[in-house]
Image (cartoon, rainbow, N blue to C red; front, side, top):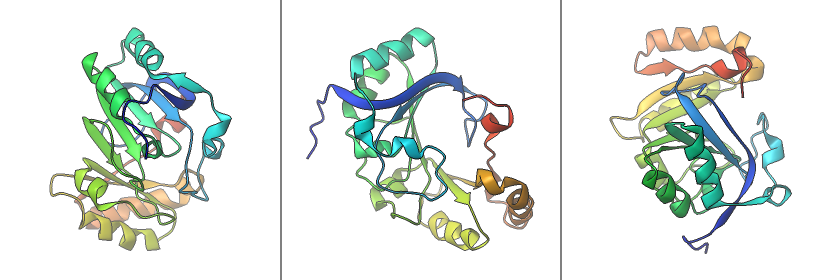
Length: 204
C-alpha cells in the first residue's frame, strides 16, 4: 500500500492553460498530468501517459511552487489515471497555497487527496469504485457510439443528486456524434453538452 507522505510523483507534463471541458470550461487552470494508467481506453489521446516508469519522478513541493508561481487559481490533476497514486500530500500543499484542487479520473482506484471538484469520467474497460461515484461533483461520459447513452444513464442513477451530468463526444467522432448528443440532451434535459473546446482553439 502506498504511503500518504510520498514526496514525488511521475509527471508526464504540466502547463498553464484554459480548462476546455465540463463545468469549468473557460477557467484558467494549471494542469499536472501524472504518468500511469491501467484502464486502457482504445481511443485515449494520451497513451504515452500509460507507463509511469517513462516519466520522471518530480518533487511534489516543486510542482506546487510552479503552480503557485503561475498565479493559476485552479490546479487540475489528470493523467493517465491520477488515482493510481496517493495524492494526499499534493492536494494538501496546494490547498495550503489557496489553490483549488480539481481531479479528472475514471474512478477505478481508491480516492485519495482533498478535492474542491471531482470530475468522474467512467470507462467500460475498468469500472469506477462506488466511493468515487458518490463523491463526484461532475459526471462526464465520453460518447463513442449510440449504446453509450444507455450506459451513461446507468451512472446518472448512481451519482449524488447534485452531481452535474455531461455528455461529451469522443474527439475523433465528434462531427458525427455531436448532433446525436444535442438531440439526446434536448429529449433528456438533465444532461449538459461538454465539448473539448481546447482542441477547437488549439491550446493544450
